[in-house]
Image 1 (cartoon, rainbow, N blue to C red):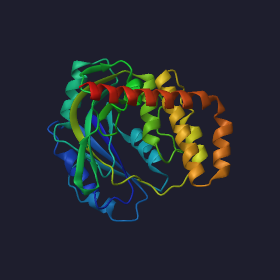
Image 2: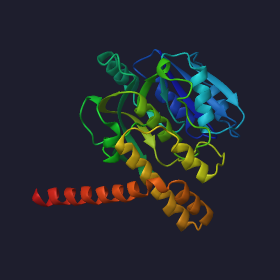
Image 3: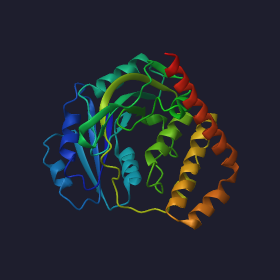
Length: 290
């Protein structure tokens, strides 16, 4: 069984379509675990209106999207987990595509697929340009080159493989999904198919109104044990962007903290920028040659 975990916070305008997209799956061995994170709208009532015993609604006080998802992990009874936001939608063949991938690569703990991204004014693009089918040997390298990403809603992970420490970080308020997926990628292999199976809505960027300190946000993210050199470059870019944003917003104490705390990443920030420039120049040269 696959457990679809959906955190819900004030998404009355979209939760119905999200649930309907799951109920329309051509693979039917699933449950839907919806964790209401203290919604103040009628989203929970919309969920209750569905007459389907595969749907479970769990309520908690507003604690943030990470704790809502972690609660879903605890409550899930399926052998495999899929995390879906309350404003995203699954394609009808989403679960069957992922399950068939699992059958093809039965020892792999993560089975992933491509996805579509919807921007305002209904502009839709494909999320990943990477087109090879099979086990991905260096996912962080593909992430650094921006040709592939492990997107929530577009992969399943074996629940039994998750230790008690592999969870969504409760302090991280922006990028908590990246923290979780990077932890998975440091631990397990990924089987991939380029078939798009879900729609990720970029118009909505927050599921919770919980506020966290930005410096703690980055520090918590960098607590992941990093072994891959491209993962180190990605972390360096996160720090570099954090420093630039704090400077632009005149948050001098945050800027000082990020520089002092992460001075060891200075050469990686410069090296990553250099590699980005080389990569862009190479792409331009290849375009001209063609």
